[in-house]
Image (tube, rainbow, N blue to C red):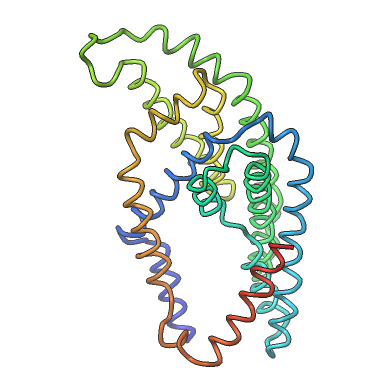
Amino acid sequence: KSCEADVSHHCGLTPDVFTLIGHAGVALMIFESGMHFDFEKAKIVGPKACCVAVLGTILPLITGTILTVLYGKPLLPDGVSVGTALAPTSVGIALRLLGEAGVLQQDFGQAIITAAFVDDILSLILFNVLFSLRGDFDVIKVVVFPVVGVIFMGIAMVAAVKFWPYFISDVILPRIPQKGASAKVSSADEALFVIMFALLIAYGTITHFLGTHLWGCFIAGMSFACVKPLHHPHHVWVKQTKRITSWMIRVFFACTVAFSIPVSKLLSIEAFLKGSLMGIGPCILTKVL
């Protein structure tokens, strides 16, 4: 089993083409969702959403750890590993569901997204602490990188409100030469799309080294939430990427999530019962509460 785990780990370090396509699709979806972020509503729901995020991180961690110990597994590392794995909230799935339901711009929709985003930040810190338990405590990876990541996100959010709307609408786009009236896509929209893609890559790369590239993808999308006319950047992005993003997301679920499930072990009665109890309790009920 240790040899199989080692082989699986090394294969994971070099992802196949399907995995790369799937993760790229998730990055594009997260970026698009970030453009729906409403800074004005976030001021209203922010404090309550942060409280929800803290509870949504701590409760799955505690209950998942306790239930794993009751299953007869040791507290360290098994119990804490399971609790930590249950703590994150999928920002991507939450954004997709809220967007399809048409409630993303409402107060409770923004509260859910804000809470999920903060939850993922806290969960990443937990993951760093968990990984440090395997050997010597690495203060750079466990403490410094997450702190720098949070600081970077704070600066990027301020820039999303104060800098990018002015820089794009008043400095860059007015200087772009215009095409003829018969052009299907204007020069300004082409330039805006290039800027969006460049910022997506830049922010995603920076936060990749600080924790996870999805942080940067979401914040890059937020950078265009206040660009005027409002929602026009989102229209430009969706017009160019909607179809390819939809297919890449399907590849993600089929070839990264589904392929990693050990079907032979999953279909056993013991695994099904224990997994169902773990999913209903620490995974779902703690988040709902």
